[in-house]
Each structure stands twice: as C-alpha cells, then as structure tokens.
Image (tube, rainbow, N blue to C red; front, top):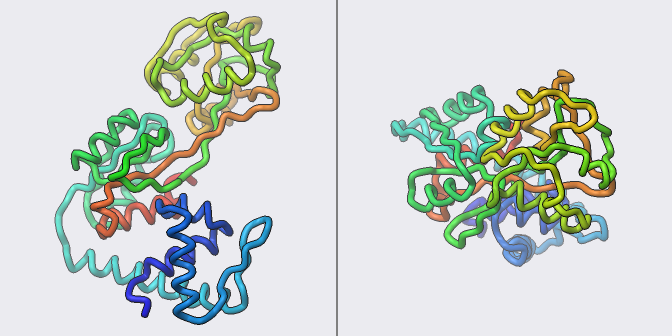
Length: 302
C-alpha cells in the first residue's frame, strides 16, 4: 500500500524533469533512491510506468494515467496542508537566509510578503555569505537557506533551484563576445579570495591559460553590491574599460536600461547553480515544506 505521498512525489518529479538525475537533484536524494522508489510503485501496481530513452524518459500509457491521478492527489494534499496550517494557527517568525546575490537581487520584497501569506506568518530574511547561512541552519538559527555555493554537509538537504551565469560587466559598451586577449585591456574589480564567484572565475581563467596576475586589478571587494557600486561610480573609460564578473541576475535591470553592458568570453560559459538548503530534521516540517514548494514553483524568480 502507498502509505504516504513521498514515492508519488518522486514519480511526479521524474515525469516533470524527464530525467532521473535531475529529479534526484530537485528532491535532494540520491539517484539510486529515486530508482528504488519508482520500482516500488511499479511493483506495487504491477505496471511499467517509465521507459528510459537516450534523450531522457517517456511515460508509458499506464504512467500517463498514474501521472494524471498523482497530479490530482498533489493538489488535494497541498490544499489540505494549507488548511492544517490554519488549524495549527501557530505564531512564528520563519527565518529565511540568502546569500548576497540571491537576497539582494533575486528575492523581491513582494515575494517575502507572498511567502508570509502562504504560511500565515512573518518571514524574516537574513542576507549573508553561503557558508554563514549553512552554519546558521545547523545551529537552528535559520529554517531555510538560499545559497550560491554548495557548502555540502551530510546533515542537510540540498535542492537544486536556479541556473545562474556569470558574465563580464562594464559601465561602457564592450563586445558581447570577448576574445581572451581583450581581457588584458580591462581594469578589473575583483571579488575577494575565498568567494564562490572568485573560485569559478579562477577555474575558467586557468582553463583558458589566462594569468590574473598580469591583469590590471584596481581593487578587491567582498560582495556583489560592492562590485556594482564600484563600476557605476567609476569614470567611463572606453579604451580601458572598468570591468568585473558578476551574476546575470544582479545586472538584469541595468543592462535593460542601457546603464551597464555585459559580455561573454568566446567559447566559454561560467555557469553555476543556486540551491535551497535546510536541515534533514525539517524535511517534513509543514512550514518548511510550504516555503520550499513555493520557491521551487518559480514564484520568486520570475
């Protein structure tokens, strides 16, 4: 008997992601665990629900029918959970942590207000370094974290959330596609040693055979906001542009207004993932579950 919805939730995630590995990342469990849960459902129902293909997966006829039923159950369970939260009527302050880029540029104020309505309680946002967010979750000072650096810990659950890209940014027009040699013409504002952004950039530059030591580095700063302020206030120099490397999310509005300009290094992309993280102890916490489901549904990043 299917005693809980967990296995059906796994089935729904595989069907939506069209991939066992992507479902594993979304759910924060191992790929063998995903496979095991799907096999349990199939053995229990005596059907084959999913067929593996070279480009992903495909639902069988029985799988399509199961998907339709599971969707209905999911909606009913979400409705019931919201009703249960109303019955509990517990007054709390939900503690959400976010790294600098996410807290300052991706989570708008209206999203926090919407989260408050979802759980019928206040949501308090704390912005800090990813490693500090992790420490605070472990010390139970935060309920959920949104981080840009997967500081892994076996006591925590990690859920893949958003795809980010780091791009070259300047306050003057720069080529949309940059050649390696052009990087030496820029005056650089760099992130400090130890930051996740600096780590990704260093790895790409090492692969390119580029030596940062020969760059003209004006200053090193500690966070995304400091980078942006430094670039915006800098005197515009077309021949030797002031530049840095930053999340595309942080400059989206300024690029659209023509205030800042972005470029990408030819043949390379600097991609990274943002994660939702929380304690395994809170895996079945109704408030945590509702907040995580709301964020994963894309309500805060559109």
